[in-house]
Length: 241
Ligand SMILES: Nc1ccn([C@@H]2O[C@H](COP(=O)(O)OP(=O)(O)OP(=O)(O)O)[C@@H](O)[C@H]2O)c(=O)n1
Ligand SMILES: C[C@](O)(CO)[C@H](O)COP(=O)(O)O
Image (cartoon, rainbow, N blue to C red):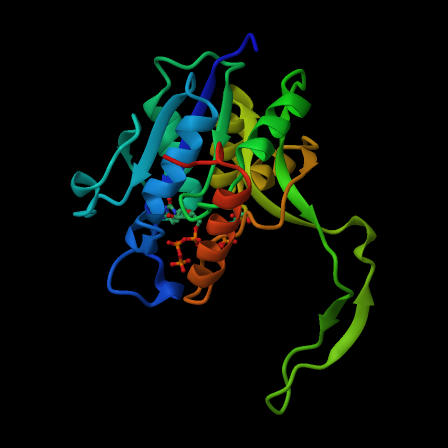
C-alpha cells in the first residue's frame, strides 16, 4: 500500500432516534461504549492508519473514554459537515492521493475481514468505493400514505439495489473537492459516495457482511450485542481485547 490510510470517524451526532439519555455512541455495549467498540476495531484492523474523530462541540463524554489514538476535531451540523471538518483538520498532513476511510461511530460490528477486503479491492482504484450489501428482499415502492396504511405502487427491481454501509474509502483530494462543491450547491449528501456521485464519479461497491449494522433505533442495541458475541466466539482476532 503506497498511499497512507486515514480513519475519519463521524461521531458528532446526537442519536435522536435512539431516544436515550445520551448520544447513542456513549451507550454501553458488551462492556465498553459503542464508540470504544468501534474505535478499537478500526485501530486494530489498520494500526498504521492516521486517526481522526469528529465530535459534537458540547460532548462531555469523550474525556471519560478510551481514545485508541484518535485525535478529536469539531464536527458540524450534518454528518457531511463533520466529515468535511475532519478532512480540513488533516489538510497539512494528508497527501492528495491518500486514502480516507470514513466509518460511522454507530457501526461497532464491522469486521476486520471486511475492512481488509475493501482496501484490497480498491487500493489501485483512482477514486474509491464503499462497503455495501445487495438487497435480499422483494422491494416495493409505496404511494403516499392514505387512511393510515401505505399502499404498493409497484415492485422495484432489486437486481441492482444495494444498502450503503461504511467504511467508505476515497482519495483525499477527490472526496474533499466533491464534498465542498456538492455542499456549496446544496445537494443532498447522506454519505461520502453521494458527494462523489454528484461530482460525476462512479464509486465501486464492495460486498460486505450483513452484521455491519448502524445502531439507529433502541432494538439495534440488542442485535449489535448478538452480532458482537457471535463474532467474538467465532473469530478471536475480530476486535477482542
Ligand atoms: N452532525 C452530525 C450528524 C451525525 N454524525 C455521525 O454520522 C453517523 C451516522 O449518523 P446517524 O446514525 O444518523 O447518527 P445521529 O445523527 O447521531 O442519529 P439521529 O439521526 O437518530 O439523530 C453517526 O456516527 C453520527 O455520530 C456526525 O458526525 N455529525
Ligand atoms: C453513511 C450511512 O451510514 C450509509 O448507510 C448513512 O447514510 C448514515 O446516515 P443516515 O441518515 O442514517 O442514512
